[in-house]
Length: 237
Image: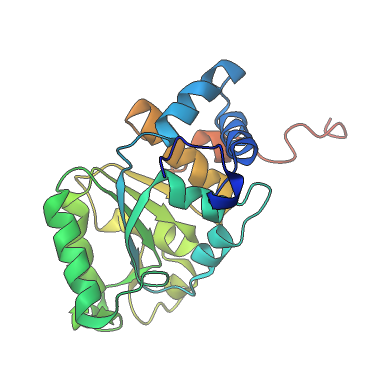
């Protein structure tokens, strides 16, 4: 069925009403006017969905759980219709050598075109031995994947700043993505877990404008982290 075919709701992942509502919420989160909603919809329904490689390192999978369990709209389902989630250890069917083969094929085929999402901190002490996947350290995997990505999204506090693993005395030498990746555009979406709308808004902004949103000094998107919840409090003098 075409991704643009919203005629039979029984066969769709997301009905048109829910889909438009999700794009409208994302536009509001991004601080865009209602006139931008059609552009977000067009970007989200493009036949050329951006490939996404989602890496898991030192984390609890809470960021993934938050995204997949989101509702009103069901962002977990919505994301599956916006991006091509080619590699994600938690939800992909393949495992072991087959999964690692998918990773290699994806970063090779879409060199410079895929989005890399990193969940979890990266341990650097003792050669990075405290986190290994397929016999390779997180440091080595990130060093191979990140330079080939069009952009990197560090989702959650662990990937953004090291998280609880980096707390003193930081026995594994955990760090955030920006401490290791220097030549690829990076955006941090911290939180434990972060708001799924912040992730969705970042992805839709990238799809629409072909660049990551503006960020603050900590690399966080201004549309989500530019103001504190108390800034508009009527009790502030």
